[in-house]
Amino acid sequence: MGLFSKLTSQSQIQSDGTPFRRRFHVEPGVREKALLEEDPTLKKFKSNKADVRRIKKIGNALLVVVVIACSYEIYVKAGIQKSKFEEMQAKAGAGN
Image 1 (cartoon, rainbow, N blue to C red):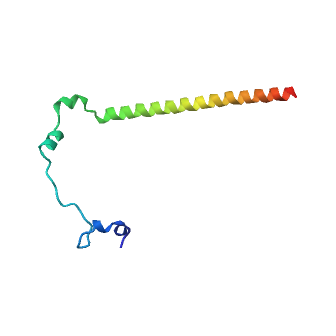
Image 2 (image 1 turned 120 degrees about the horizontal axis):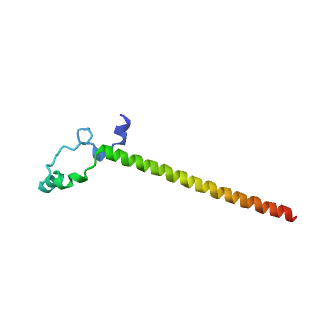
Image 3 (image 1 turned 135 degrees about the horizontal axis):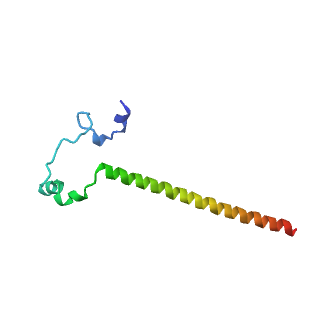
């Protein structure tokens, strides 16, 4: 008994001991066939692989820019906080 046979539930096993497989194929109806047909009015909206690749590259570049900008903002804010903290320590040290 392999791992797969242990994971298979009893409801998925047929009476002859083999795993259940679908055996019936239902032909699509008229509506399904109509939905699956190509629509000539949608041809102008069809994308091709080059366009999709270009859009993905643009999206990836924008993501990198946003991450860099956020990192820079965090770095600047941390620098400002650090300088304020050092000023406060200097004032506290000078006051004593």
